[in-house]
Every structure is written in C-alpha cells, then in structure tokens.
Image 1 (cartoon, rainbow, N blue to C red):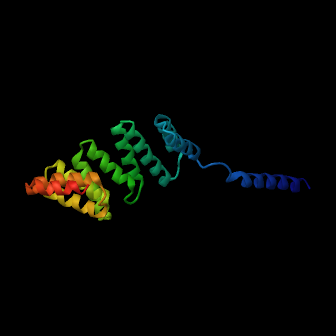
Image 2: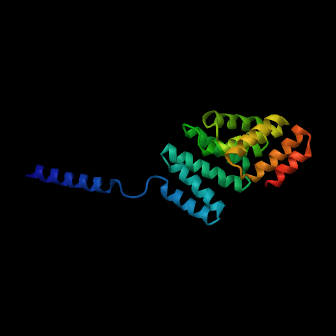
Length: 194
C-alpha cells in the first residue's frame, strides 16, 4: 500500500514536470525579441545590449548566427566598425553555407578599407552564388579600389545585369568606363540612365 502511494506521488510529480517542460520561451528568446523591438523603435544602444545578452543564452547555432549578424548591423550603424566585423565573422563561422552574413562581412571589410579580405569574402560568395548581385557589384568596387579598371567594369556590369536599378552601381560603372575607355561620352550616357 505504501509503495503504491510512493509510486503514485512520483508518477504525479513526473507528469507535472513533463507537462511544464516545454512551457516558457527558449533560452535567449525573450532577450532576442526585446532586442528586435528596441531596434525597430530606434534604440540601437539598448538593442545592442539585449542582443549581446541573447547571444550568450541562445543555444541554437542557427539562431546564434542570425543574432550575431544582426548585432553586426547594429554595431555598424553605431560606428563600431571593428566590433561589427567581428560579429559578422562570428556569424559566418557559425553558418555552414553562404549567408547574408558573408555579404555583410565583405561589405564591412570593403568599407573599412580591408580590400584583400573583402575580395576574399566576395570571391567565396561568388563561388557558391555566381549571380549574387551584391557580391558582383562590391567585387567591382574592390577592383576599383585596386585600380583594376577592366575587372571593375566587368564586375559592376555583371552586378547591374542582376540589379539594373542600382544607382550607385550605375555611377561606379560610369567612372570605371571613363578610366577604361578614356571617353567621357560613354560615362555621360551611363549617368543619364540613372
């Protein structure tokens, strides 16, 4: 009789534990949601702190990579470029394939003047996604930085085939065409299309 009561109590206790086991938010999810709300509200400093806290708690590699990428964007907007690059790098490390974090890392490296590292990222992206318009355009900009005008013109033209409404790409291509052709008429014609 006593054994039956003990078994019943233990069974009831286990049933209660099982019932509540899935309740609540996953680790870091609450902080992540708060960070997204702060970001949407324009409070980037608060969003940064909340995302950093969420990243420490998140156990899912995929969600952690996404949070690192978003933290990188926030840090870039806060003019914390080196920290942003670190977050984009971490997001890339956590992601198995090519993701938006790879493009963000390449762009941030390019804008920070780390041209060789940016070129490596864009090459990596283009090896997996040959038609990626962002990578094509930025690869053209990398070539411009290196004053490799023909390569720049080719990269920018390829990027514009994918995204013809890119005004910055049109302007950059006009500049490279001016260097390649030494003819201002071609550049002026291109600029009139913008």
